Amino acid sequence: QVQLVESGGGLVQTGGSLRLSCAASGGAFNSYPMGWFRQTPGKEREFVAVISSSGSSTDYADSVKGRFTVSRDNAKNTLYLQMNSLDPEDTAVYYCTRAKSTLYWGGALSNFGPWGQGTQVTVSS
Image (cartoon, rainbow, N blue to C red; front, side):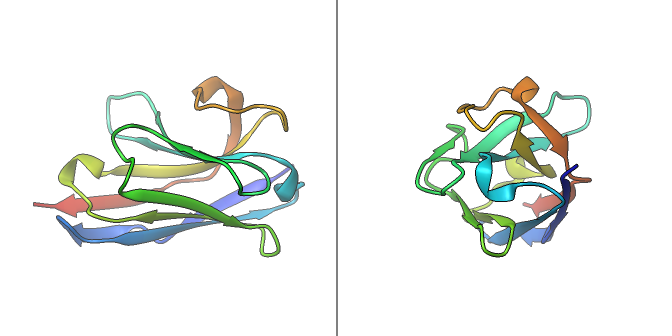
């Protein structure tokens, strides 16, 4: 069973940057698409970004396009999310996750799992 551990969250001012990391163990990391989601209290977990198993394809939520970049290092079993031009609306707990199928491509919540424990990102105005 794959285990995912996020890190890199914190408090940053509007316009700042953060880089999240997700270390994977116990599974075939380089065979699956990986994703980032985020969640705020009282709201459903929402899609942020997805990357193909090789890293050659990516997709983003409209709200983060042009500001966030997802990448992966399959040799290190690590997923990244570079977040630039951060806005208070980006404040959330960020989760990394693995697609349930090696063939899946998209951002539907039900097609991802397991999940990491999450890392808090807070953007101050």
